[in-house]
Image (cartoon, rainbow, N blue to C red; front, side):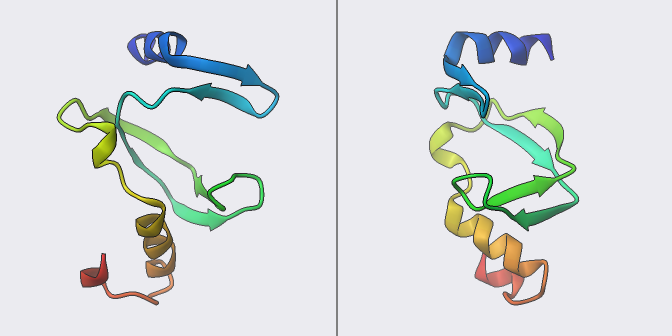
Length: 86
């Protein structure tokens, strides 16, 4: 985790009461219990009980999931989308 802390410090744009804002530069793989809708974040979603799995050095920030995919994953929790729609 010290390695990630160093990356956060190097890429930090600003920090305020809402959190630490960084320039996107790495890809993290996470797992979570579920996706929740929220008004607290600009995406409209939050991960419940997120856990860091690994740093994805084989991926670039251009490879990350989109907000559209996050919406589909959210709805998939309630079986509104078939897995092949992702």
